[in-house]
Image (tube, rainbow, N blue to C red; front, side, top):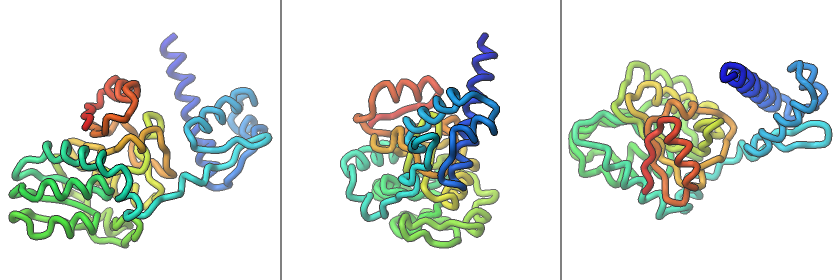
Length: 262
């Protein structure tokens, strides 16, 4: 019985992925087309579309669905910096407590990560890996720490370095802790960002880290952006604020994720 349920669940996930992959290219899709392509009833497809609409991945239309264009919207770093400042400061303070002198850490882009840099300037002997120009500027010349900044093309919206050069720079670079800022955080869809190229760089950071810490204020929960970075199963710790519903925290803990509320 459990195996049959798992198989049905896996088929559901595969259908959802097919639908989203199709929409990313074609922007719209018909129920009849999906029913034929996936060899399931139109009733099943409508249920899939309802689920994906609840997850804010698409918008249902007459006879089908269209891609939710909000997946691609990304406020600038300056715009995000003024949002939920108290929560971000508290999350950053909790994250800083995990960093001890002499550690090797990776810091991604993000306004909460930026708040965190100001709280670790008293640490010594750190090796800091980052693809974020603003993070590098904040930490330059502090307490004889070693700073490793990837190369790559600049994304002005986030001050991130992206592209093949950034990815190659991270080959063979391993860290004890990686602190990751994200646009969206969902149990089903994982960590997401509007930028495919930025997702690839952050994924590389995560793959090469022993312990992955996600910094996410309550506004990021159950929000989905265009491109998945990694699944939730690749996250060890989430630091968030007290406005996240308790049931969401319970779900994370049930998946084996350590949750710290600031």
